[in-house]
Length: 463
Image 1 (cartoon, rainbow, N blue to C red):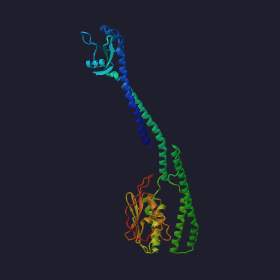
Image 2: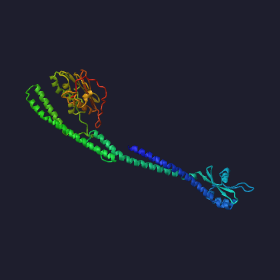
Image 3: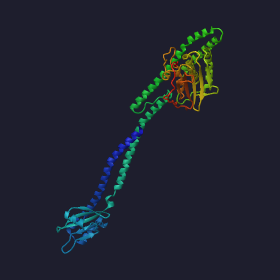
Image 4: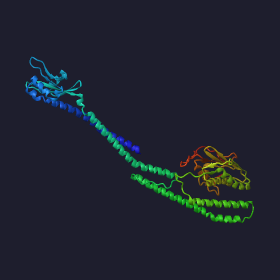
């Protein structure tokens, strides 16, 4: 916007300067020429009184030399021919005979071009009735005297006007662009999670109103997020009562493997609920200047969660396999988020495939990404797009439609994504791509989700 205003002002001022400077320059040139020939006419008219009294050669010569032009050798007198004689000329003659005769016949002043300038020819009537011509030489330098300086002054004034208008336009542009740049920068910071950013209400009225609207929007976003955190904490807190009852009932189950597993599951669930409540209460949005979230060892989390689900898999007669989780694999994901994503993936297998269905979890590490593959031998997924949509329960009872969405959000927070296809067992394969090379403060690079996916088989939805 700033450069656009400068260009517009430059174009308009330039046109105005040209519209006035060019005609004015031509007028200056014409005035200089008129001044030179007017001076020549005055020099010629100085001989008028002498010519009206006498035509004596000696007296006329003295009168010619008494003038400025005559003393400088720029005046000549053409006397008409007398009886028995020819035309008499005094001084340095530059005009040709033809031009002199034309001026004598027309009986009015004229100008003719001569080498080095122009000759001004002024006719005078003598007492005898004949016409005498006084010639005054006007050099070319005299005709253009002062024109170059005047043109230089005009050019300087024009440049000064254009420069001044550009400076004024630049100041006006800065007055408008700086608030707009601040507003754009604040919007980018807000998009990166810096919720405390606000915009000074400065500049033109439109930008002030835009800044007011932005600040009001930011305040509303902060309030909505705070309400959302409180709601999540309150809803999670409501689970404590049924969890307490469940823990008491589990304690009365007695001894045995199933009883121990049930008590361990209830204790783990209670810890997770407490973690959710604390996270919701204490969560503060990460600003653009804060360091990125610390990562975790994905292999360690995978081994822990697979050990947890292995007991249930053994009860249901499911064959399981884990590959690639032996060596440490660090990812830019919090441990709790990684565990929640793995529980969602593995929970889908148990919830939406028949008992006895085999499944596996594979971890692949590349230079810039970690890929987690969860494959099963179940019926597959009929609509991968719908399965990844938040809140889509796929028509299954007991499904919230948030499981795969939790996984997708975890992956996309790093710049990765989630793909659904067909596994080597013939069932569903869920591939989680976790990007490793996202820079701190940089928006994660979203992978193109329009690439073809392998078509799955119907029967499994997200929980």
